[in-house]
Length: 252
Image 1 (cartoon, rainbow, N blue to C red):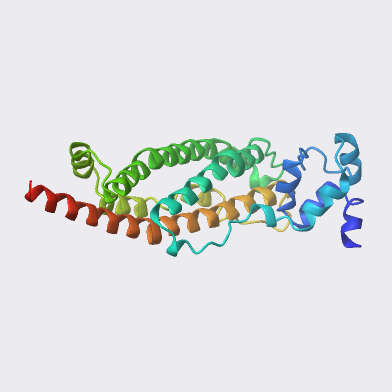
Image 2 (cartoon, helix red, strand yellow):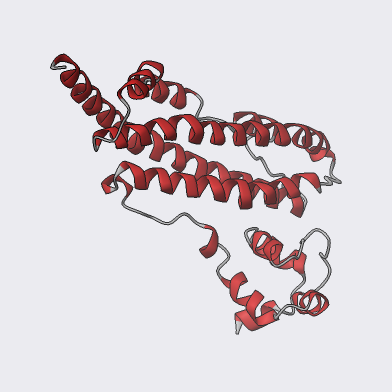
């Protein structure tokens, strides 16, 4: 019965009750800030959507957007990297464009948030550019090196190439540098005063902060997987490959 009633509620009311619903609506092509006074049924009729399908998704807004709880500690290195690359894809193609659209369309209309609106519109694109650069650099250097080590472990390697790569890279150094740069959203936390919400904060602010908080939690878990699972496994692999390589070199 509760689900049936959702179709008669205003978009602003639906999102105010649960900020995650804004994300669901967005992927149905409904921007909550453009149609706040429409009922869900009205906007679905306008856009040619099946209202019952939208209602079904709105009833459990977090289900399709949460990380799967996997026993990654038991996975081999190659599957852990595939998991991380899939997360990178979701960040770049789904979550970050959505947050970027929220920031781009942000109109504070509230004295306490006018400066934050201005600062976010400057800082978030810079954060986005830096974050995407970090992701691609990680895949093109770190992941590529680890894949080379995996092949070397199976005896599939060019001795000269492997030696040069091992001389050039150090997973221990990469792990230390990676951990030192984990807090990528510090600047955003500072300008939002740790996502502080005034009692009369506009709905748009609530949605942006909810998404930023959620993304930061996902990033923290992502960093944990890299620091506590990927790097230890990869460093053990690197040590084993180096030992075999230099042992074999002594007998040649």
